[in-house]
Amino acid sequence: MKPRNKTGLYIHIPFCRSKCPYCDFYSLPPGAARGKTDAYLDALCDEMKTGARAAAFTGGERPAISSIYIGGGTPSAVDPEKLAQVLETAFLYYPVEAGAEVTVEANPASAGGAFFRAMKAAGANRISLGLQSAVDPERRALGRTADFDGVKRAVNAARDAGFENLSLDLMLGVPGQTAESLEMSLSRCAELSPEHISAYILQLEEGTPFYNKRASLALPGEDAVCGMYRTLVARLGEYGFLQYEISNFARPGFESRHNMNYWRCGEYIGVGAAAHSFYRGRRFYYPRDLDAFIAGCAPVDDGEGGTPDEFMMLALRTADGLIYKDYESYFGAPVDPKYLEGAKRIPEKYLRIFDGGFALTAEGFLISNTVIAGIL
Ligand code: SF4
Image (cartoon, rainbow, N blue to C red):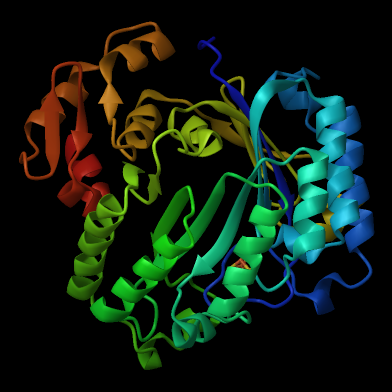
């Protein structure tokens, strides 16, 4: 049995007001979810109360929870009072540590004062807001219905409700994006004074409308996207955000504790359709099926987790990299020499080897899969 890290609780809300053309997350637009929202939220609460469905994996344990994350989908697309009940149920039935990070995702198109106040009253202390781009034509191309002024109103409403920890999501490589428009997005994003910024490169996922019409999208080329990533890292650094993971930047002390737990191979329990878990060395997940979750389906075994390869790959996503003593305390054994040998094969432009560990450089982050494959 491996030593226990912290445990996160993830709650999935699979509803959105409309479906963005690039999105592959499990979320349903109103037409497909009609009349089922309350039944789903009730089912979430029931599972958190009893833990019965996941008991085959958890042994019925209620580990101390160090972070809660309500994601989606769009949590702000459902009735704030009902969502508050979901969060309150989590606090009632899990031993949530004092000072736990409690994040709720929100979409500027659906999150207003009532939503933020309800979340704050229910115990949330962090908001993750989907900005994607601060340039309106890019926002429209991504299917985002609120304009940038709407984003500003949502940020102000979150601050007015008392949230002092706000994260904004950005995207790189979106249709029509240029080096100049990215600079504009970054400076407008910084003007909103978030504590945290996540920035992901658009992926064309099979089956999405973007994938199907990829030939006609005005997508920036690969070199341009690499240039955008370098600009992102440089500019956010100038604005005072430290890069602590490939896609994540924070003011000191505001790194996402929930996500850091994933990258440290910590345990987490996911509740809801499409929610994944890692507990006591096993991975398991609920099917991407709203009706099945409402009907009481159990999670499905997804095999062993927390292997040395996985630990190494996740650690290399972070700016700290693979720290030998963390590996040793996780596995109770020294770092496998194959990783040390593999690391020596990687040019120092991509991998930094230092006393006690090794980490990807900014250039290494750009080709992280290749570097990790090279180490393995
Ligand atoms: S709001 Fe988020 S989860 Fe919903 S469709 Fe758009 S990208 Fe997907």
